[in-house]
Image 1 (cartoon, rainbow, N blue to C red):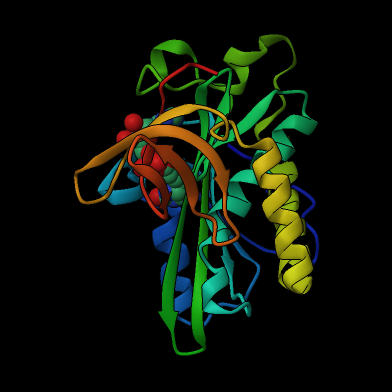
Image 2: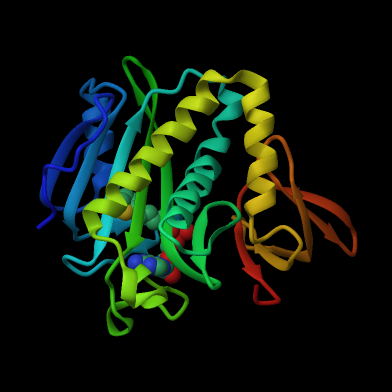
Length: 256
Ligand code: BT5
């Protein structure tokens, strides 16, 4: 069981659940009930974790960090698409500070050696106090090879078994990085937004890769990913010209 004394900063309130179907679901319910910015819902074990587009996020008991942070952004609606990218970027930064070569695959899968170590699901929830953002993060910490749900996954332990941080350490480091990155972005206006965009591009594993992007409508496009624009869209040079993609699943055609 995760220790509940994890030393959070005072701008966070912890709700630690021994088990939960989905921390995003709990945080969304709390948001609708009026919970303030900074509520952190952590599940020691999550039994029905959600991915994007009705996909699932599967983690065995005791092996992962699964949490959702409730935020009440005041940035303009046009800036919201950056929230998942910001989260992926800051999660990768936190894992880098633990000694991992972590990178983001656009929009927000966190990879180590090209394998997915963390997934992010950001949801917008309409509440009486205005729109809230539920920032859900799942990280494979001590998961072993047999426990991984898909061959494209990895865990911190599989990446470096000799210096795997504890789940409490990962939770604390990642939450602090997300909160700090979010606060700087939220308070910093267009300058901070531009800084985030250039830092994201510099650290994104997708930029510079040949990619196939599977689009939400069922079609796909192929080409070279060359940039992420100020709206957070992936810029792809295809045979038919430049395309800007706001949502989709990227496959890196050449392994990074
Ligand atoms: C995601 O979706 O990667 C978002 C995952 C978000 C999980 C967190 S945990 C806390 C919070 N509460 C929730 O209910 N969710 C959030 P997507 O990009 O759609 O990727 C889903 C796909 O990742 C699946 O279809 C699998 O292929 C793969 N996958 C599932 N479990 C995985 C794992 N543990 N590690 C790596 N890949 C996984």
